[in-house]
Image (tube, rainbow, N blue to C red; front, side, top):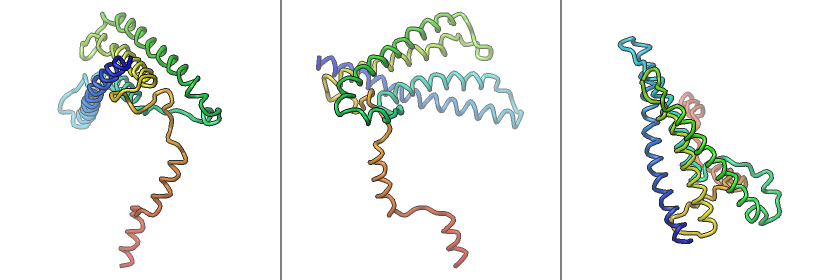
Length: 206
């Protein structure tokens, strides 16, 4: 099982790297399409009728791919208000496995239902790009499958740790420990703070 855990975690990392770079590319495309639309409205030099669909479809894929990458890195927000009041060891031993299973079931549901939704829209085309709508709709099953794979990899990593696994425990991914945040803020009080008002006031006094 350790070998299986290693292979699945390595595959997950590989797919997340691809998703990350695709997300960056889609973000650039989305921004360029939006700016192009604004430029056309201001200058009236030419029409960019497909800009809205390009930006919208890019945003849909960016959201799903970005969610998968964030899940793998433990970047989704969580709330500790109940967890911190549980007896020691209760969460990790009993609740974390249950949460992992619930999350895995939800991601598989998104993948399965998303695939069915994409198949229903396969015969449709977008008005401006004339693009088969299966391509935008595929972001749902692809994103759901990637997040489900991340959850499986995290579950295996918890039980069969390997060097290829992620350091983020997805089921217990929460906001930063407030005591650590407070300590960091106290240490930063002595650091120089950029204050444009005080600089301007010093210049006026000079």
